[in-house]
Length: 187
Image (cartoon, rainbow, N blue to C red):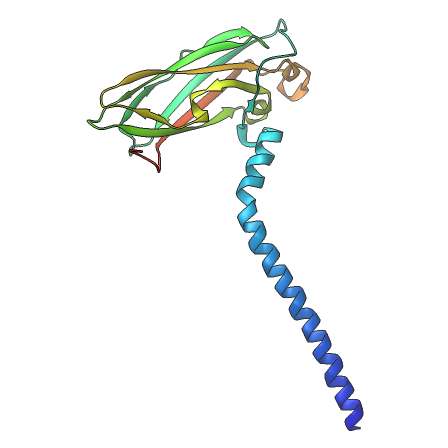
């Protein structure tokens, strides 16, 4: 009977060891996924346009179509950033046409201030069709005390938007920026 009990204890020990290794692997995998989740989410949003994420392009290879779209521009400035930012005026143009607009930012403080802008597009489903060729939001911006600058955006709306039946009634897209003080302020 002792041989049978010993064999049973050895089998239980192997099973426990196997479960322990599996749970350890799962824990390591979850930690790795936690570190990878932000870049993976950003990649997912860029590829799918989820959450109003826009696309980055070098030009518009698809041309211009007759359908017109109004692009509205919005701005919010975090209270920790001593800037005043004026949004560009609304623009109505043919889908596919490359346009340039400017936001105007002023540093209201007596020292250099570095800021960064994040953006969003509404309606969210249109984000995948909104392409930026050049944008101040790609990098941090440092403004000297009292300095006022024009901050350009060169963009186009992809003509493929016209093929998306869910967006057939959309006549207006809003590009919204929120400006924050940079973590590297003063650098």
